[in-house]
Length: 140
Image 1 (cartoon, rainbow, N blue to C red):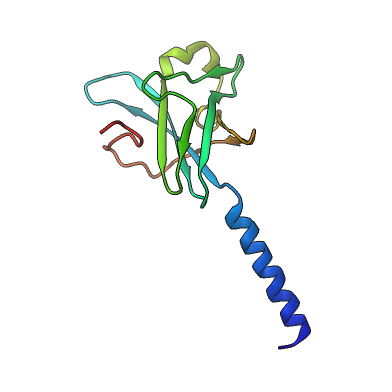
Image 2: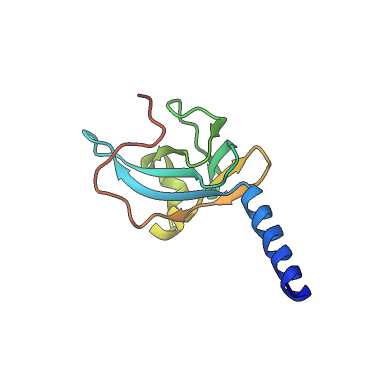
């Protein structure tokens, strides 16, 4: 094999190994209403898409003033294994004053998640949510 090809291959392998070791987490948000309720909630979905376990330590909304999501049904910290989803929520009615003047898109993008590594992640809107379904991470 040519020396240039060997160096290229070594760099590619190194990059792949580093990216696979890195803790990758996806954070998505959407608004939903629980069955039997009329209260819309901001749903914050976290999925460990990496190959190593991660721990979620904080969930909050980057609004003024900042609002921490404390949900007794979804206590933190939460350890997530590879490919494991977890979701928490906060009623939009609890945020009325903080959301004034924000667009729907800004509300969806306001969620933040902090990992045990001190890395903070921003949410992106989930535009492909089924009309009906279970909440990931729910008790069996």
